[in-house]
Image (cartoon, rainbow, N blue to C red; front, side, top):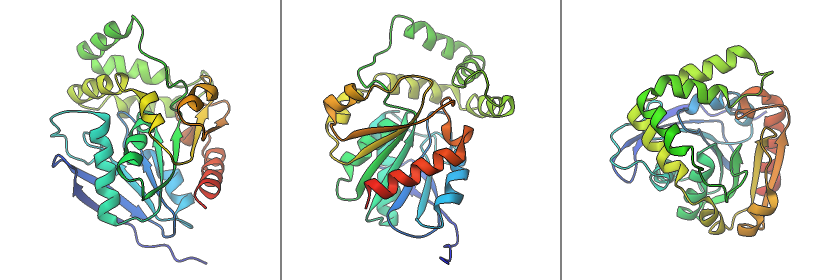
Length: 265
């Protein structure tokens, strides 16, 4: 039986000096780095850390502006978040890494893979990159204005729309409360950065194997992704919304472990 490493928490300065908090548990290669999405934090991965830690070094990160990390970032961009990931991976000197990124961090791991081509073995985006050619429509400006005027109410509504009707009401409320607590000025700035990010161009620069684990709430357009990255694959957790790792953790964990085993041999 493998003896699990004692959990270790630490901080490291990102490229712009913002303090990034991380936690390391388990032991084994490849290391698995789990990165939350917008308005989340490392705690969303609790069910995965426990499962993966018996076989892998598992690292969770609070991106800048989120969780226990610093909030003094001058410019909120996807590449800046990727630098958060690089700072942690390099401090821990992880040689072979699988990056797992939920929601906006599907974009973050694309950038991080470009920054660390010799360290990143594979990418697992989670409920993201369904249509990399999609761009915001006419209602985007009005939606962003509603976020600016009443961040809490708008975010709570936004979060509830991320779940299917049959979702556990307690889970929906938990995520709505947690995500609407993000400082509004950070939340709005990050959303602007995320929705202006060129996903297709970033995807075209990635050579590592990619397997998304998405819900079936919205279609995943494989043929679109493969125009930019022929190695793009996807698996679905059916009957879930935007948080498959929380809604059906056992099925999600099975698919994640399978992706790690098959992509990062």
